[in-house]
Image (tube, rainbow, N blue to C red; front, side):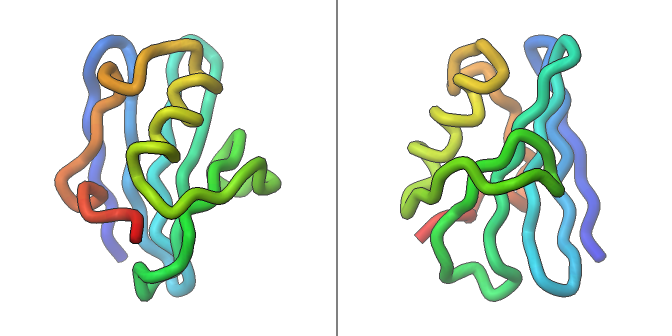
Length: 91
């Protein structure tokens, strides 16, 4: 199981891999957002309010998923720290 964190601009990002998913979860000032993809890495990205929350939207591209996650956090997508292990998410 992979577990990697990164922090910047008051935002903490945690990347984890489970048996079924790759999950990049963000937290900042009591807000959260998560991006999930299947373990094989070929499915669309799911944006959720939390790592185990209900899906809000699906995206093909990582940039669009990061935009939505940043919106949930009330910040710019450029402010989101992305751990190296998560940098290849998306189709």
